[in-house]
Length: 386
Image (cartoon, rainbow, N blue to C red; front, side, top):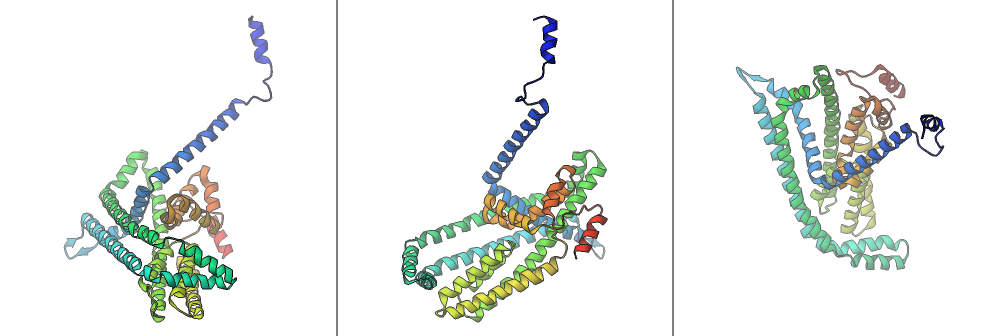
């Protein structure tokens, strides 16, 4: 081919069905993104036991980090509490509390396992009574279906989960110990990693904002959950119902799941009351009182104490619950809101990811905290909304 023919071929227009170089680059980027997202999901599922323990350890560490810093500044006469001593004391306190809570939960599980078999017939009869409101045929069908379920197998499986709980608690304690050992060098590592002191300080402020918001959320949730669990315990003791302790613990745990947890706890409490009492009206009264407790503490007191700490979308919370629940099960639902708050704050500081933060925020304007301040635009929108 002569040079003239080559120039003539290059000058010819490309076919319409061929992609340009920019389009092919975009398509390749999308494919690589899908592959990377799939790999991340695979790792999240396969390593969920370790990752769940690590996230819980980070949360516990962040809850006590500010307290350790405050204690290390105290002086008792001429003696000063060193940072190392405060860290050791906080680690010992966390280990004792976790092991104590694990022991209480395991003992309550054993109590439920040993006494549930005695309520099997009563539970079947109670379920059948509920179905009897539909038709006599439905009552017989429900009773036959429930009796075909191997209850003892599920109870044995529940008892076997106690060993997994103890293993997870041990792993969390180990992670917390290593985090306390590394906390003194965190700022230095951050500066050396970013090679920019100003950028390291900005990242430190973002981390501090995440820690402050998540800590406030967890402290309020813990206080409200404790009050709800105590009220449920007193309610069941007042009606002389069994499983008051296990139901109080279950209520405390489920209240960490926004919206859905309190509903599940109330329904379970109503079923437990229905199994133990002979009159459905008494079980209905217990159910209504438990619902009132959940409503007052969860829908009135909780938002008042939470204030502006949780500026996330309600629909985003439901999506986060579904996503992390599908990946990590019940533990993922507990951690869904803290992870969502952290993701929203991080995305609000990245220009390319700011639309994600806008979708996750409650008012559509996620705050950007710089040195403890928020944007004036966000304040005006929140003031107008209130």
